[in-house]
Picture 1 (spheres, rainbow, N blue to C red):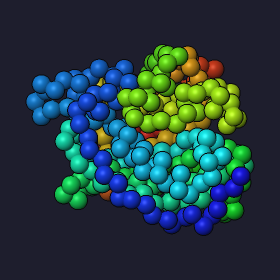
Picture 2 (cartoon, rainbow, N blue to C red; picture 1 turned 180 degrees about the vertical axis):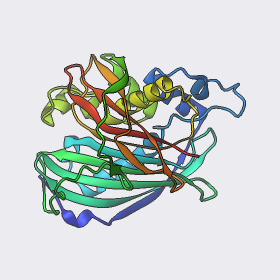
Picture 3 (cartoon, one colour; picture 1 turned 45 degrees about the horizontal axis):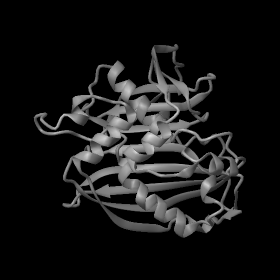
Picture 4 (tube, rainbow, N blue to C red; picture 1 turned 90 degrees about the horizontal axis):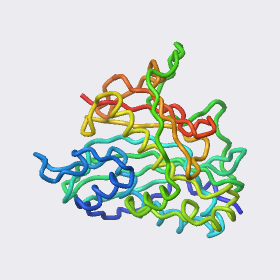
Length: 299
């Protein structure tokens, strides 16, 4: 099994997506997030999408890209490795969106082939809604692309490391992960990848069992960050980034921790220098499920 480095630069789409209240509410419900901003249609101004909702309308094009560029035997081996989402505005009921994609990078790594996609979404008027750099690692798959740069973490463009180490978590909360969490998330998000719900497929892909979606893990962590930091579900989140680590199995727990000091400073969606809330999440056995988590707030 092999992925060619010549895929870099290829473009796909646009593909249309229509957002309705049912989809937005189902996504929040799949996360167990009951904030009225996501669920109460009587709310002045209406409901808004969860900050991670862009993964839902990006997914159909992601499937199209993968199926048109990769062998069927390769597809089940893909796991989410990195995520860097810029939110220009939240999705709302009635949005008619156009999603385009481009393969930005193809790299050979020790565990397998790493691909970085960029999804750019605009509304019916052509105004930007979201931009996502989505990195996948295809385990055990060869690649004739260049090796990853030394020390590269792909934490996201515009990020700069601080020299001052974090002093430890300011807060920590445990999130229960039900045995059916991946099945519920699959239906609410309308994201279907059988490694998350079908044990036979997960085993054939070399996984120990079905695992929770990376986007579900990140969305659960973001909900806790917004709640524990007192920001509110409709806070002006402009960017979210992280690297994925240990697999989240089901049933289990996820420990989300707000760090004492931001580990990274960067640019917000408007290109202005701004602070970020740093966070991480650990699996039930203490392994990092999310590393270098950052949540930026816009002006």
